[in-house]
Image 1 (tube, one colour):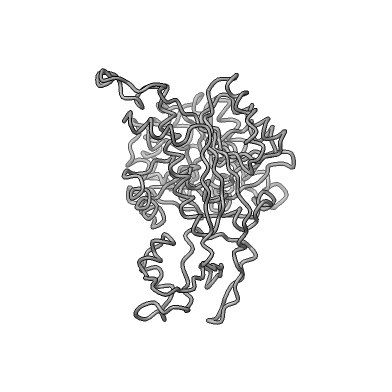
Image 2 (image 1 turned 30 degrees about the horizontal axis):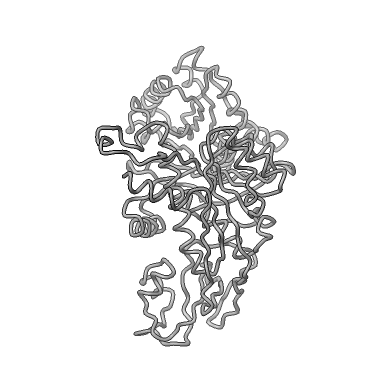
Length: 477
């Protein structure tokens, strides 16, 4: 382990440049056929189907299905439709409705994408002696946990660059150690290399992210934070958060409820928590307020179970239709008791429970009850292990690094893949097209929007989930 750590330290410390050279023989174009996006590849002499499948990170069977007239063997000069791994959904890609195709080319450019990764690494300064065998494992130590997560994130970024290189991206990747020390962060921000960046990714897990954000704002350099941070986008119009805040997630979930259950009997159950009240008000704003003046006589019923007990919910239940019970309670004991009581009401009432993320992880809640109550919840990150995209990613990651990817590796891949593909299409002006450029990714989908003209960008994607035969199923598109 120590040998691995030191080798990796020598590789990434302070600045690593990863320059991708364009394969000049590839003239790939993007085309939309029957709603699916494809890359067009002109076959060269000697190429095989398995080689192309590996090159484009797809299955050979997928290529065969996309080219029903392929026949036996590949003929040089012919053009293949290659399924695009992550469809771009760019509005300028035209739908092709016949075998005679008119394509929109991916603009090949020699512009270099300068990306800075700011990651918190805490490697030992010296190699341990033989007595290290009796010491705690390096990554098990509390102060080094973030170092392991940063390495995994970095590995995901590199895997994305492996794919982007084949599409013609030129990138200089600079990896900087982001110290968890105010003075050292100030020193880092004096590095002249930072001002040449097109994009800053990170820092991860850093108390001094505000200093990096101020630098980003002052120098007008876009920065991406892989998780949620409300303050970051409120104070920096050049900042983007990939995980939406809990308020934004609740707003999107409220829209889902409004779209699917607006004419049902809707009940909000709460305690006296101020946090619950804040999230409850979002449901009222999205669902109930639009009813005013619309002729809809519906109102949302509210019950405070901290005062009158859980049995009070029964007063608002309707035997004639479906009862949509929304609650933002997070206290495990309260949730567990409520779920148990609601499950007992099922004999007489049709109930769908809209709850909070992480309930399914509460040890005191019976999963059978949640399934019985048609429990729906939301999350900013959902990885469906049955999806062909994640299966293929796992294969690629395992082949390169010889272990399974973590969430940090997947998030690093998703972010680099999205912004790399964005730069491929729009070059240095990529930041002007972020809000119109949506992409399906592995851990989330990218739908980045500003909440106001002066704010940064926030991802607008959540996954709405429910149990289906004790398996988690995504129910929103």
